[in-house]
Amino acid sequence: MFLYLLGLVVLFYLFRWIREVPRVGDKASKYVYVTGCDSGFGNLLARHLDKLGFRVIAGCYTEKGEEGLRKACSEKLITTHLDVTSKESLAKVAAMIKDKVGERGLWAVVNNAGIAVPSGPCDWHTLDDYKLMLEVNLNGVIGSTLSVLPLIKKARGRVVNVASVFGRICVTGGPYPVSKFGVEAFNDSLRFTMAPFGVKVLCIEPGFFKTSVTDSEIHIKNAETLWARLPQDVKDDYGVDYIEKTKEVIKEKVAQMSDGDLMKVVSCMEHAVSAVWPRKRYSPGWDAKFFWLPLSYMPTCVVDYIFLKTAIPIAKKLQ
Ligand SMILES: NC(=O)c1ccc[n+]([C@@H]2O[C@H](COP(=O)([O-])OP(=O)(O)OC[C@H]3O[C@@H](n4cnc5c(N)ncnc54)[C@H](OP(=O)(O)O)[C@@H]3O)[C@@H](O)[C@H]2O)c1
Image (cartoon, rainbow, N blue to C red; front, side, top):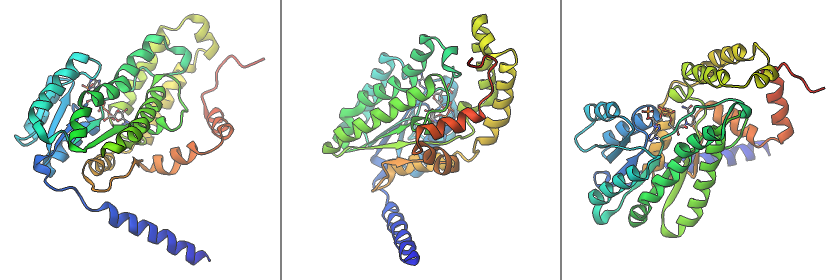
């Protein structure tokens, strides 16, 4: 019985592996628009797709990002300034893309741009902090998708959304998980409603990887900034040494948990863009596969127990 089951599992993975190998042809005529190409996954993906022969349109937030990519890539790659929070910027880039792709339409958009701070316990934040991050991580994804969706429908192309394991499970405060849960919801609603048009919608849910999103210096600075502006009574609730302990945890844990092999994520993005049969969801990273996603299926009380047990203790306990 055990061997029979094992055989079925092996057959399933073999079938899936064979099915996932073929890639789409005629890459040289397929345009792929990637947002957030200055650094991290977006930068690496733009270079990788360019090498594979796709026509990449790389949205960069900074002039430096554009320059770096132009130097590193072929002449086919187009860089453009893009701020996903600006309607004008999104419309300008969409008009440029429409002009380039013509009747073929746009093969894919990869919604990768995102930010990770401000981030901390919920009562350390203002509504404006939430608005700021949602504007980039959620409205930015929706805005860039809608700006090119008619072109994608024309090509019967793809939308690739970069969410996070924190779009599946929430064990931190602040706007980041809120934005990523939003991306997951947008992704799923888009997948259902675009399927009749032959448009594929794929979601990438990475674990922790070494980029500026997980940079401990940035997170320590962010924690100090949020702490400094807290009213004294809130600081008293947490205790005088809470901020120092927070900084220690960030320094030790975040660096330790982050995987340096960004190609694990970029290979999934590439597969979503170019495989004949892409997966609906990708979870790159051992932590995503074996910790965060299994944990997301656990009962809430179990998740709460684990994380409250290991959380930094606060000064003001319940009476
Ligand atoms: N690293 C991880 O562990 C991890 C895990 C799960 C999900 N993710 C997600 O993966 C995506 C890529 O992040 P990353 O890890 O590669 O970090 P990253 O290097 O910081 O990449 C994010 C990119 O977005 C750009 N960006 C920021 N604000 C923008 C705006 N308003 N308009 C356009 N572009 C903007 C950044 O430009 P500047 O560099 O100029 O600011 C940067 O190029 C993000 O959506 C992130 O949430 C990352």
